[in-house]
Length: 260
Length: 283
Image (cartoon, rainbow over all chains, first blue to last red; front, side, top):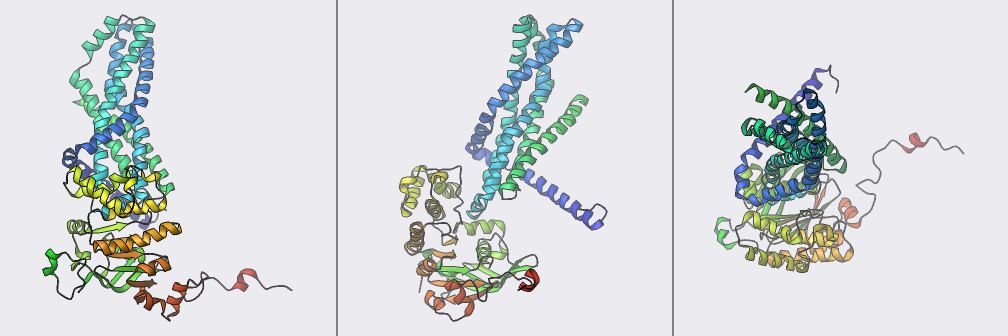
């Protein structure tokens, strides 16, 4: 495209708008298909299992190491002010408000998002989606919607696992290795973490990220060129687009949550 | 009168002379500027096997897609059991598709489901039958294609011929009126090819289905067909019984039926004269 030719600019604008419109309509359909998914919950349950269970290992291991590092770095900073007992609070707040939802979403995009895109793209390439349409079964309802809601349900659960394992990691470093008083570690955390404003906001974030990542993965797979090259491109795009939208959305959500 | 494919309950709705399940009337279809089907008229008689032959890119698969309602013709009518497919709403289209099965070129089995669940898929989606009944129907359909014993295999464990037969069992799961076969023989060894051809004919006769076979395999296709239609350049080049088409004196039909590499369909892609590309021969 040459940017100075009005016709090209107009064509690109129209195509972008059409893509956005198509994407929005698909998202709206997926959201409205919630009822259909509840009626056939077995399909959603399988996807929660598939997406959640297979991401569990990478999420737990990452959570553990992030917890270790938070414990060390938090102690390093806090001991300058003589408040190293607050390291438990710092670890917990960082995880449930921010790192839990965000890192989980990034890992989810790479692990589950990529596999969703590849799966849908290969189904398209193997004419499976066309075959389904010819059997009078709507692929959006049968294939995309259960995966969408499966991802949206799995994401907060995985973020919770991430945060919980991370807090345990912080405990291991701060209490077991450095020797901070265990009672202070836990009681500071208990006193300082609010269920609604801290944990609740984290859950809201991870639900939004769940929608963003899963939808991106499904759209890229559904719209992939039905060739090996097209599927590989779509998979890459899923990881890039989903990761960036998670980071962008995180900023927007954090700003909104601070102003409330 | 041929009434094999006609369900008695609906027989009164048909005019008595209407023995065509699918009818294309002056149908024109193209992608953008390129015309793929130019003013085509043909009928698929009920209970018969019709095969559609022609060079690649000649509009065969497009015809299947039009009948299935995946593409819409720009001009003309396409009647399925008296109803115009080109004017159908998505709901009506889905209702019509429940009455047709389609066999895709490479089977298009669902790779995450095993053989049994693949065949059960249309039943589970469209009916509320109890599991025991679904099991019986699926095993009957698998038995009809000789694969009752393969119910627990995954599609990746099947050979090309078995894959196609499972897809056929899936296509007949809902007892359709019409089956569309898209290149059912491609990539099959001679035994699997013979089996597939025999199955198409047998299922057509025993279940009273109407079949449309798109293929390149001249001998097998001619052997099982009641009617042969040859498409070339978006038009119908020949139409009739296999014998009539085989005896045709039309050069294009002869080239196609006898598989000659040069004829009305050129061997050489249009190019500038040989001299210009290779220069004068210096002796």
